[in-house]
Length: 177
Image (cartoon, one colour):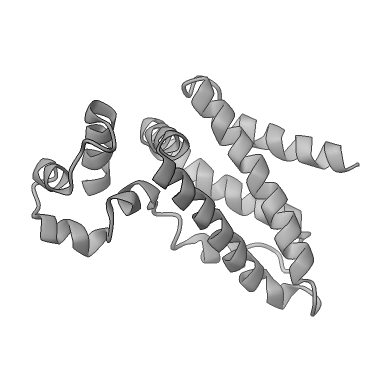
């Protein structure tokens, strides 16, 4: 509810012109309660319910599956869940992350943290010393996700995000052949 109200206000007033107090009022909570859930205004945009379950999604994949295939499946499930649940909410978040400099920086930081998490979770499935490959593959696939999200944002969410995601992953695979 807090995120929904915050994103609505950001769309109406702009990210910079929206205060924490306005978000709290719109969500019928106190500013103090806002900070219990989100340490910063940036966090209200960045958070999604798939962040905490990504390790479970990864654990559900076959242990002998190729790294790229595992990453693709996990990303498709996580992003697909957000997309199916509320595409407009996701599009608003993507717009903000693409146009607000501090959110773009946080998005890039979150990508780097995601690769670290992915590499640490995948490490037990891979031979020792395979961390370099995990990071290279992970970052390349995150770049494909970023291109798909940007194309979806640029066409105002008219295209199917999951098709764009598949196209981006396929383009990466084709480019590496």
